[in-house]
Image (cartoon, rainbow, N blue to C red; front, side):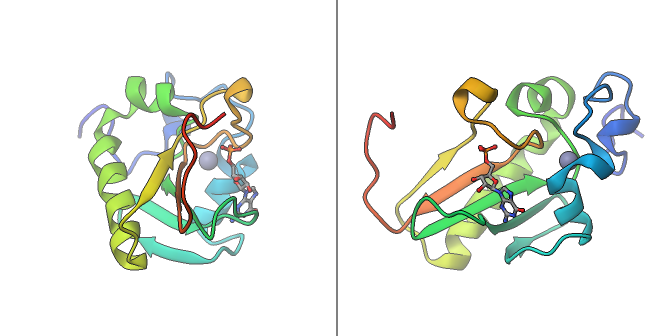
Length: 135
Ligand code: 5GP
Ligand code: ZN
């Protein structure tokens, strides 16, 4: 079993977000992943779950989250880099499922960058022209 076996919840790893108060049962997205809270699912596989954002910022706004609790982009890169391909694939699978040809992927990282839920999630936004720079 590898150090970062995907069956191991990150909260059981001493170096992966274990001191994070918003993890496991306290984490909103863990509760959606487990099915405890309902969400409008658009895709799921062994590694990721994708569901519609409750306050959409575009006609299509889907969140792709790893089943495993990781706090943010940096936590994932440091402690669960093996999730990378699954997240890449998850976004593409959402785009395929919804017929999105033009879309934006955003990962707000840290409060000042707009992160409000501290379980990694990739926003997939589409269905309207996107401004650049994003502001
Ligand atoms: P962040 O601000 O962390 O980048 O993104 C968190 C996103 O989660 C926000 O866009 C917010 O609307 C969404 N969100 C917050 N609570 C819920 C919820 O209970 N269900 C769903 N589907 N989305 C949520
Ligand atoms: Zn979580």
